[in-house]
Length: 147
Image (cartoon, rainbow, N blue to C red; front, top):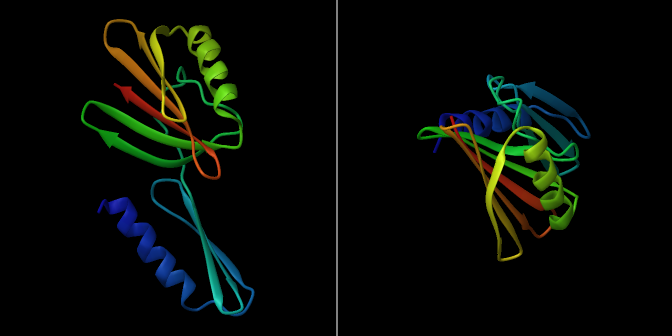
């Protein structure tokens, strides 16, 4: 389990314990994300908002209606998972146009189960893979970027 996951689980447990009926509290984490815990009678609703890192590249396009749900470092790069209410076809069309507009060269795209993969490069060293798939309640976008 990552340190970030452990941090957020601890925050949610500590924050939820002292809440009274229909009360809500929000805590900001060290990564810029927030956790909001709301008690509703006998139930507790917890929402964790993930923030993109400050060094997230400005030339990697992000759909305006997409919100990050997971951010992590990988060997030689970064992985970001977003969710949106937009359709797979809308997101694929967005990335096909926006990548070119930001100076990326689309190398390939191919259909996958319930979605599409797009691979792009920029210069000699940078690669971006965009995975778009229809989830149960949202369209999921996975960005894998080499640094």
